[in-house]
Length: 368
Image 1 (cartoon, rainbow, N blue to C red):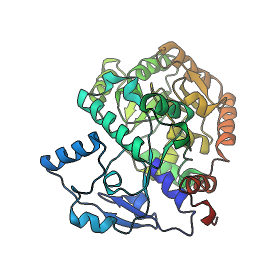
Image 2: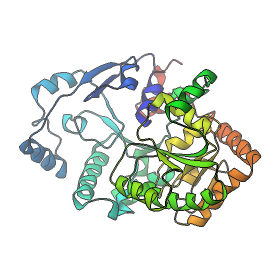
Image 3: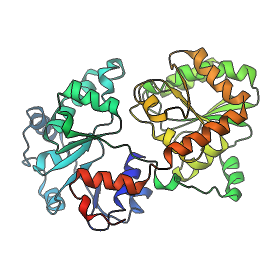
């Protein structure tokens, strides 16, 4: 979603040419109207070891970039890296900006292997020390970058991405509602959670909290979406062990064009994450006037203000109580949905583009 919003924002710039580099295209990239260049670089172990040495000692050298890739990058003046990836911008000695989404490994090292922690450390260190500018989406993450990576605050810009343009002022096609219900076998009211099954997404406690809710509201299900990750088998087993297989439904990764309908059909979005720099699903819910209940961790309170019900993600009773508040009071849901929309409606791609181009020192060229 972040990359989608970035593309939507940069589309507003009518003067500069943008090229997307990727390993394979998806629908978002195909519809971007930007030129797309495919990188098919397959490194062997020896190449990977060279790269590891280069960014461990922060040596910016293109010695390990294949000639066929050098041709692809030859006309690029500036790189925008939406994730903490190294290739190719670090090695080319060309200016780049990078988005660091979080430093979660500093708080929850148990969620990462030693190798993953080491890789995140050397990658973030290499990128943050050589980038022209670092982007993040919250003041909380900016303070972490300063604290853990020892970066001057003037080098860091806080620019939160708005929801993808698809969801801003989205008009639901009423004729498609029954199609979506049939496609996903939706027959009851439901609470919605969209997140990959990483440990920090806190599915396990959510299922325990929903078990409390399910005893009071027999006509409400919990629907989960998102790609399966490291904690997936534990999540599925938790559902089975709580005898909730007929009440908690995992739909997996779904078509993005179907997502607005699942939001709108839900009673509210639940976001129980233990660590979240900024939550795109919360912004998506706000854009669609869907009420939100979320954790009180990291930057989420900063993100939602007074436009959501907030709970302690470690407290199952607190989490279930907030869900019950929405289910008991439809007017509260409407009120919070409206407040969320008011909070997000000025957070648009025109302003986002201006801020991005300001970071790129291209602001004078924008025509919106």
